[in-house]
Length: 225
Image (cartoon, rainbow, N blue to C red; front, side, top):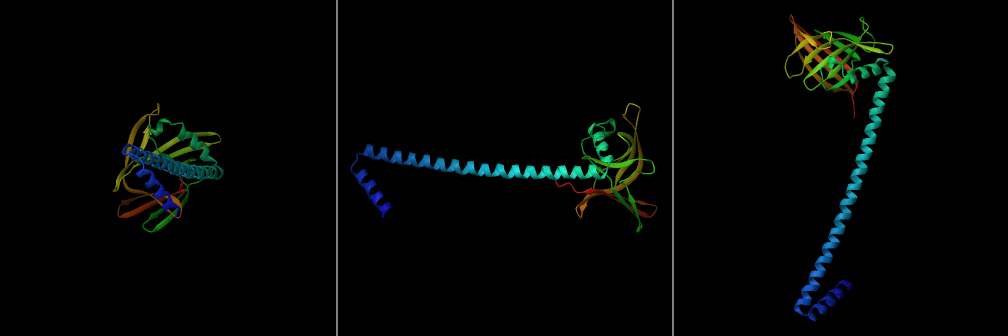
């Protein structure tokens, strides 16, 4: 009833106006509606943007918590990790200006024609070194680092090229200035990086004299950030 009454009143006003007055009233009504639509649209977009920012802010905060916990756990469990992190962060010559991520090698499972050998890599090797995997876009680099007290020294590095088929493996040596001096060819292997049961694994295998040897290395809990 109310809407019908308003419509009747509006038509009555129009009928009592001249042509120019009618056009003016209609124009004003359209402009008012445009402004109302604009206000509604602005309010809706602003509210949506506000909600989106809140979601992103909460997400960033959650990611930061997981990231801090991941590194805190590693530092608490493996005393060598903090010094290794400083070594990689210092961008030594042995990184060859390559950008990547490093992971502590924790366990190794070597399958030699179904004879399986388990190795603990989390502690010092017989050469008093720790192994770390450095992953770049093009290759995997296995670093042997000697870590004692507050000092971390480079000992050696093995490079495995990335690829879908067999790829070359080299031991790299550096001169006294820290520059790459020699690439010693060791053969070819298949390689892959995968996750299983919440852990990240690096695996490579080769065929040698009729035997298949596969080395699967546990890199610890998968990074969820």
